[in-house]
View 1 (tube, helix red, strand yellow):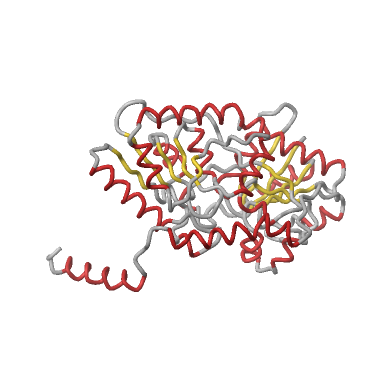
View 2: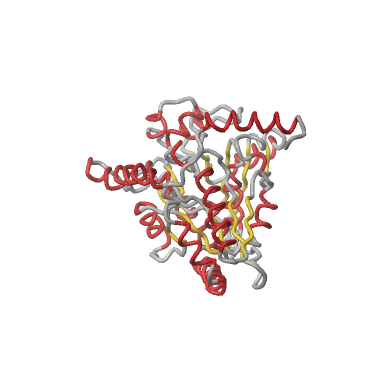
Length: 388
């Protein structure tokens, strides 16, 4: 079985990790072609790629002629012409097995493609969706994991505790329902944590990992005993999986829908994240900082859990099963997890949106933007005069 993956952007390297996991299975091959290696907000992280368009055009066309499944990621749809002369619509019409794999919400995909959101929902290609926050917007999609490598170093057993935070977005938690990591609120939380630890004589190092290549990010994460992913939205991300795999204690806020998706994916209810929102995280972190031996023990348990339940080869079987489905029935959709009535939709989506809004008044208060600009201007003037 050969699967050929196409994506506009590197997508934090996710297609490459899926392909690597697939290639580890007997009788399975997978390749990935990306249109623009420097596209999008993650270009500064420089993820490892495979094939590039148009540099490897001839090789891609040869692989396309003999592949068993075409795997489109996120923004690519039947009318996409970015990989011309490849016509996804023609491949679909001739019965080529295809899947479309979503990593983002329908609204974000639609904005990128300048399409109505309904066009994303109506795409006839059988859908896959990561078992994270986007899945609640794709009830006709099959859940698949975000694959993560497990051969990663772990934090040291000696020395002071270190906490890391590696945001990929820098807006505040209330500025977007999903396209945020609560940057301002989390940075303020880290400052409060450092001051509290200093008052109690607790040694704690803080590493704010911003705009660095992914390899450097992983190396710095490997020195962290504690890690913060997303404390505001209700979902986990790649950061959570990498932190757990490296043996860190990871804090993230997971709502009930995300927990249900994880259980459906893994068959387990013990995903080892510390499930806490930014409004309560300070006290939880202080408790862990006061008990470094416990923190290290929790980290070792996290790594053991990932090794037992999130092995790349095991995660790859979700994709192989999906491929077998579309090879047998190229136009047949996956069995739907439908939300056909208002009550079901509210249980899956509405209640968590309401809870997200209700939590915001309890988040760390940020300095308003209108106050920051004058303050920055005064600071620049004082420095120019040599007074600061």
